[in-house]
Length: 217
Image (cartoon, rainbow, N blue to C red; front, top):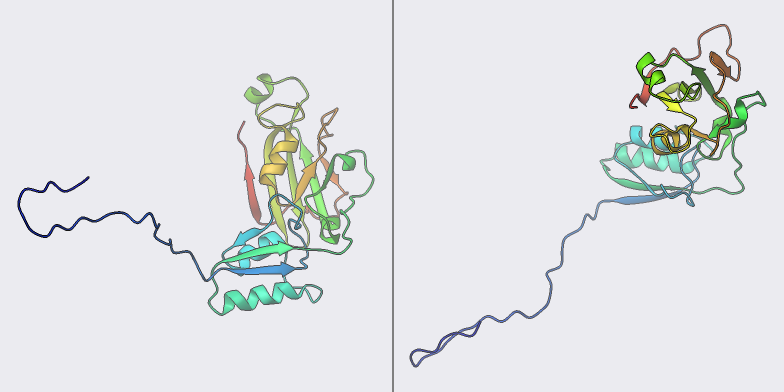
């Protein structure tokens, strides 16, 4: 507001120029664009992916590969002090992985394109807690585990439902939480229990470290 002039002299009044201060931004973020063994493609809504370490890179895009120079670039970046990167996976004619043609296999597919998805294994069971079964439509609830044999990572999802609109609808849960698997938008019948897709060998394929999982209703 104007200064009140009460006596002769020199008055100083600061008037805003309207120029906004330039806000500082990070200048150490590196972008990587190239081929990767796995991960969201450049057309995926989840791309680009921000990673903070090479271990983080591996979780999203797979390990080192001679066919993917970007993996070595990311390794050296983090080994030499890098701490923040944006990664975009591109491809030339990659196709979605196909699981073997078993009864329930058509319900599920790899989360993104590439041969990596051919090494996924899925296990389904109906060992849902009785109170959850009683609170839902009969024969709609199940548990699912998926293993990536390339990385030995396992994801577990409990109390899934085949009912569209259910808070634990399998298609939406996998879309939101899984790095490995996607399911059909509509599932007519609950997948069979005790099924491993494709069939397991003599050893339990799910005896490995847990990647992540959730059991919310």
